[in-house]
Image (cartoon, rainbow, N blue to C red; front, side, top):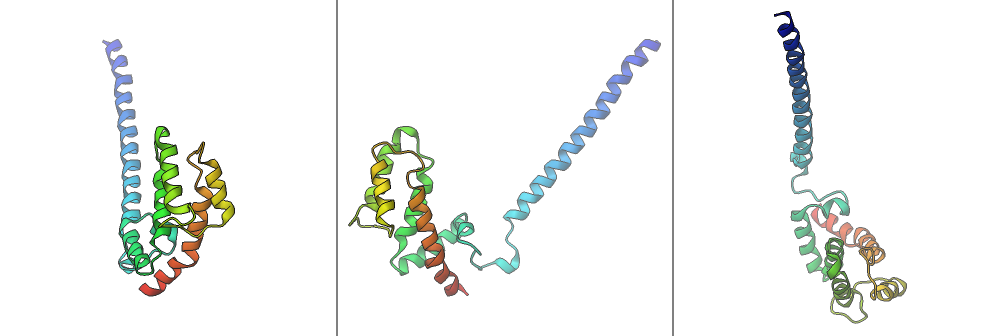
Length: 163
């Protein structure tokens, strides 16, 4: 009989240990979900306020739509469209990279294209030279230049208009 009691003890302590581990797991899970909920929450004083940075704005669909509308009124929507196309391009499957890269180049970087963006000739030529064997980073330099242009120019005016 003594033997059964000894065998039961490890099982009992194991169950207690499992209970403790489960409680710790649930506590951590709750903290993570609380953190996520807080980050998604929009404090009252931020309602209808534009993002403090262009990078933050570009992560929020409703603000991107508002910024796009502003850019349309200034006839400079191509910068935002190019930036977003580059972000989508980075998710392109390997078998479609070349076709997509050529399409983006022809639409935004080719001289005289209908949506030509304002980048220097060296950046444009670098992209063109790499079109024969493109990778997902082919537009990084042009995308960075357009981001900086939007940040210092149109995003600044956008924030002023909303203030």
